[in-house]
Image (cartoon, rainbow, N blue to C red):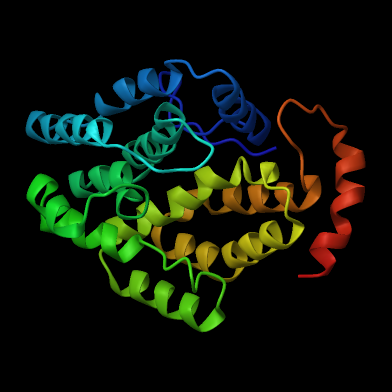
Length: 245
């Protein structure tokens, strides 16, 4: 299975199985692994001023109260931190606003912070980027809405597109925990229709990995916490889902 490693000294993307297991294990037993990887990633930022601004944004993110059903604050924050890690390692040149946007990309949806408050704390560029990335959950599966949403991303700053691609990439590793065949199917079809083309124009180096990850999700279907499965059996069992796409 595909892996994408920048150097021997830093993690970027290991095999799909390793990445999925890391995230699953973290949910079952949160540890400091994400914070350690973030601390290593920030060292790749040459500008001391940029590192300071990113560290301030981390502190701001950690100070918020989040409303994400079924997840503790520690478990929730691991996701935006992983997206920021991926951004720091995979996007060149690194845009500081991109790293900070990655850290805060869901806050308008999962906290009481509004865009004005966000702009005061981290700047108007990040606030506008987070607004652009925030999905209207009442319309999220409507084709016309999604076409407009992705068209807006295409017309926006490159760093916003990069955050979107890496956000979806990170979410895909644990999509198999969603018990709804319908929702998983809609999610994967969205990736195929809009996100992969966005990645081809924004982060082409991860396209093959992303395609492999989508195919892997079609194969394994629903697999809850702690369940070890036979991959051949999973592939046979998920063919029907893919044929319905």
